[in-house]
Image 1 (cartoon, rainbow, N blue to C red):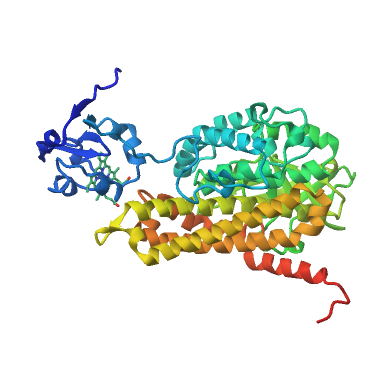
Image 2 (cartoon, protein in one colour):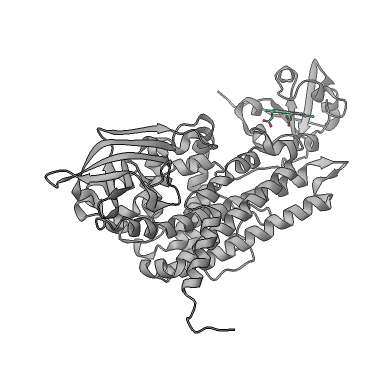
Length: 519
Ligand code: HEM
């Protein structure tokens, strides 16, 4: 269909169309004919036929009540009949692939005129490509799936696999060897933890927490034990399909009766009489991606203690969805293992050495969560700054209220401190072996995560106060704030609850105290 021809009007011409039967308004230099739409308008008719709105430039009023994206929806776009002579439309929301110009909406290293010791030109080039890819391919699917609760679309997994993003989400390592990464922007041997931080932080900008976990949160925590402790045969059999986004894996540790208390797990693995198979019985709870996983990295109790075993979906494995505060897109599952037989070759690490396998995974998992929490808090700053600037109360923008500014100050201070600390820790990771990371960073990462998620909750609460009722409303202006406030607790629980982690950090410090240190 040919595009509708848009005429040019003067404000005086528009002013003639100010009655219910002939109703035009101007928003951002564009003229809309709302005559037929007024009866369908979710905000009602009366607000549109108000004498301050009908036939007038209602730009400020409109942006005080709607997100810009409303005007981008096809059903509303077609209400436009013209433009205002000599006036250009200037408003925009997010431009795919581009950096935001809102202050503090980007980390310092991405803000024009600022510097950072951590990022190279390659990181910058990589960030640009990842942002464009995520804005174009992932963001629309994230919004749609968050809404309908379905898992991320296979076509998105496939496209991410083409860029080898699933592999890169596991950080640097030999699993990247021979792969073309992000169209060749970065060579496998050049990848460091800052590249991984970039992927995680860019994904978080989708503002869809359940979808974010559905987007292979299970792989990020479930596959490293296979890569680090699985036999070469097991790796050759299952890893390629997982990195290609064709098969899915999850980490199955927590149980209804044991969360942080990993030693309290009750799922058992017993050797068959011929010693060739494990027979597994038990249950697992809150397992991210469990509903659609093909493989399960399972913590089991064996005669010698705790053993990690890779279980494949098959007879005796049942998964069902748990309804959580975020969308079903995450595939959070309750799992039952009922006499599930698994070849002993699927053992990950030493029999009885499961605690080491599980613990060695935690640092990376928690660090990924810090990357995501820092970025999500930053997105809220952008939401709040925009809202406070465009929303008027008592005849003035919200930004003119000191209490609002004080809340925004707190948000910015917290977010900047979290990101700076995160970048420092990431730099340490980049220069340490996996073993050194385990020895030296368990404490700092535990502190960072505990601090990040406490900051996140303060920021979520402040944002809701700034948005008022809209901060608890699932659609409209405050939809990302509502979403964040509803889901922020996930970060503070998954991978270790706040108090447990803070305590872990102190215990690590106490252990490292010199025996002869005195006041
Ligand atoms: C092209 C013109 C317009 C379109 C397409 C439109 C569309 C919508 C939509 C989709 C909503 C539902 C909430 C949301 O998704 O954000 C809404 C709500 C609303 N609209 Fe409009 N609208 C238009 C113009 C206006 C104007 C000029 C006013 C002037 C007062 C207005 C007042 C309202 C109000 C008061 C609400 C309820 C807001 C809330 O619940 O927070 N709308 N509109």
